[in-house]
Image (cartoon, rainbow, N blue to C red; front, side, top):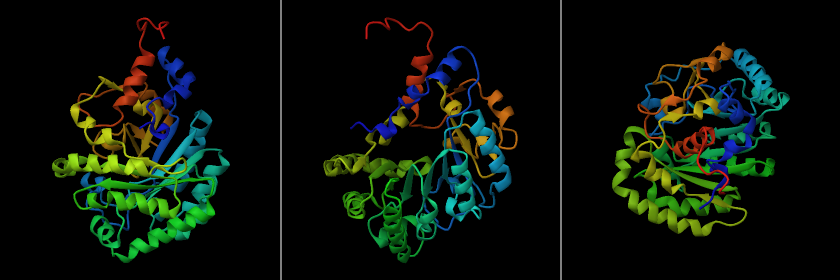
Length: 333
């Protein structure tokens, strides 16, 4: 299915940056994914942050973060996603940060476990999108996946309802990391999304070391995803993203990665990393206190030979083609 929200061709809307790259110049990212802190009030068994050995003690300094966002907005940054890491709504200055983001004219989005949506939904006016990591359609499975009391499920659902009521212009989606513990709830999860009036539901596979535990079930998962696609309507999208369950583990399509040139990944330790898959486990590219030095050091695409499995390959393949010198037969459209 064609999901424009996940299109690998979005970079075509940033032609000036592409032209600059083709001429050998430096560009500033369009978008930053910022982990505000590593601490979290959930204990998800599949947590990639915990797998990376992060202690949960890191947190961005509010004043330094504001300085970075001010600098970046002047350099052409367009959007910021507040994510984790940990649970971003636990950030002590969360409301003030959103207010500041709006004053800079930046688009912003939120990825959250939903546990504090009842408390913060009123602060989220103007958000482009919100994605709530629910991963279940029942309190019991929710508890098994997230390592919290089953009672938390109803609080998350109530928070989603409140956000939907207060933020009619914001795209609200629910995400579902498919695991052996919850895959049987895929159909019910789509029904839950429909009943809550959200705009979409999204399915992605387990990532990292635990991916192998899903491998015996992939065929069954793909059948379930095929089934639930029929529930999509003009107002309700079902992002099955089926290729992510198989293709990333077949190797990289390009020799170099251009993703960090367009998307900055800021971890809660204040350092930038090439991407979320390499966050906290690779050599930092630089710090948010010296962002100008960072982008001079990342002006070249990074080699993919040592990269883990990745679903940015389609984006890299498209960018590689756009930047190619003298591609053949371009006028034979």
